[in-house]
Length: 465
Image 1 (cartoon, rainbow, N blue to C red):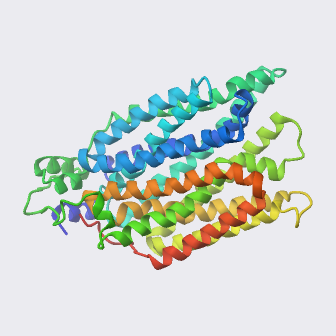
Image 2: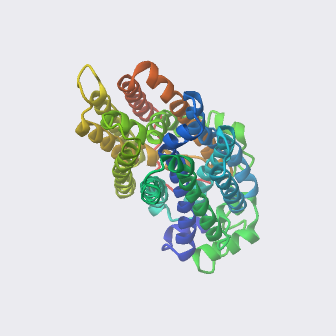
Image 3: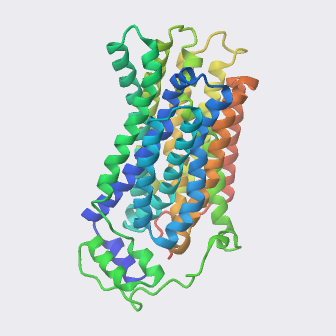
């Protein structure tokens, strides 16, 4: 182990470590808010723009396609120009695209700006995981990374609460005008995302620190020493003798598919791909699914949307609890066991949801089964795969291609999210909600099996640069 890594592992959590963690968590919160607020806004968008089923799927999936492209392309750029520069570009993309979504004038313009939002989110995955893993002690790395990723659930919960508050405000101010709520309610919801992006951008400008490990991998020892002193808040010498460059400094995109790293690439990407089919398909449409399964006897549009948003908020609380469980257990139990157990729990939750809406089993949707299924799914998803896939993608690749590998894994995962989100409303019409949920449960079980056979445990191990 080189001098900087030794000092880093011995260090307490310094103020710069906490600040870079908080900034990464802020961007991840934007991720959660932007991806899930659209689920609450969609019923209003459908009425305002007279959307077809295909357009509804396109609006929901556009940000995920953008995320796929952002992860795939900007992760590699991050390894070339540095984590800090890419973070600033990322925030700028967020601000511009969030403004565009709130001011969209038709379905096409909304799809375009939602796509740009996704590009920013996609860049955030490899940047944030590389930024945190390289700059905190290894004994705390799992908890710190997952702790930051917890803010995805915080953002989702804030999105659900934003929807509830805005709907209630509009109904109080304009009690006899449904048209005003339909035309401007969704704009207000998406406009909150713009305010959040501006706030995170302001915080980002207050802290401009590059990862010392990034500089070491590039052989830039002068800047590495300056960054290390700022990060550790102590004097430290960083040079070619104390911190030699890694042997493999010329790794590139193709290295991810070499015999040495192909198993790492498969572990980081395939289970995440299968998870995201279920996670984003269910997550984005949670309000709609709850409305169909539990409130389909309610004829009043406003009451139905408020109740489904309230149901989403309750369900999202268990997302946060799941993350907290992961934070407590990840450095004790390990990444792989948590991921396998989580996939099994996700499958169980989906099966419960399928039974709840299965007309061959229940004549009327079972409210208790609906919420039990969602709670089990969300709790075990975040206690396991939704945390561990993100963490593993930042731990199992060397520094010179860490963001590239994490970006590729996230891009493959987002292709699963595209598949789940775009096909969900279409398959729901053809197969019915219950049959679709049974298929998603099978994909989760398959992901658990693949995790076992591809397993690489990183608990307690230092990063290899």
